[in-house]
Structures are given as C-alpha cells and as structure tokens.
Length: 164
Image 1 (cartoon, one colour):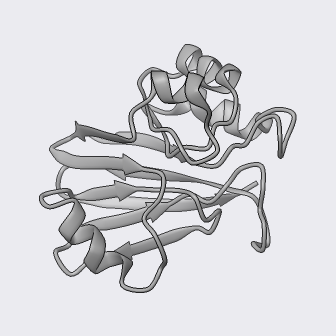
Image 2 (tube, rainbow, N blue to C red):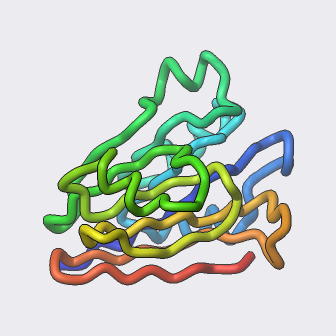
C-alpha cells in the first residue's frame, strides 16, 4: 500500500499570508497524512489542519509562541509503510547537512524539515532522504511558493515539489 503525504512548512499565517492558499487546503483534503515542519505562527492554522487532515504530524518552529509549543513537539517521529520518519523545524546551515543529520537521526529513513523556505531534496551518506517543502505562503528568494508531495510504500520514496 502507498501512503501519500503532504509536506508543509513555514506557513506563517497570518504574518506572511492571511490564510493558506486554496490549493493547500485541497491537498490537505486529499492527503493520507499531512506533515508540517513548523513555523505555523498561529493556533488557528494548527486547528484548521487538525480538523481537515486524516492524520497530522507537526512540530513547532522558531517563530511559534508558547501556545503552539505547548501543543507540538520539537521533533516528531512516526512510521508510514515501514518508513521511519522524523520531522524537525531547523537543521542548521546547508553545508554538511546530510552528515550532521545522519548523526542526529540514526535509523531514520526520511527527515522532513523547514526553516529556510528553500525546497530541498537530498540523500545522506546513510541513505536517509532529506526533504524541505519550502513555504506555501512566503517564497523569499524562490521563484514560487511551494509545498511537496511524498509517497512511500516501504520500498520506495517519491517526492514531488509543487509550485503554488
């Protein structure tokens, strides 16, 4: 069986956008699992995604206040189709990220992270996949706002970046 995961990070509602784009809400409705890698900014976005998602895994980010930190972990871990997944907001600078994450998250198959607003898709020396979906509301220096789909079935992991 394949699990289709919607990956989000750095939504920054209502500071960078008044609301999530319609395409994101439609994707939430279609996803088997929604993963949010932090910087929600307001509790209403967490409540909205929790209500609409079949399954939601999320963490807090550096812009999330005490209310969100009380409801979300710094690191989330779960398994989908035999794939060990961790979610964290920050991974530090891009230089040598893969090696550092191998040390920080041994035994993890997929690490979802955010913070930079820059989409990322690499594989570490141990074979861990690192994915950053960018931001659906604040593109910063990127050509477009983005989200990401990840499909896992235990033997394979496919990721698709979606410009918004």
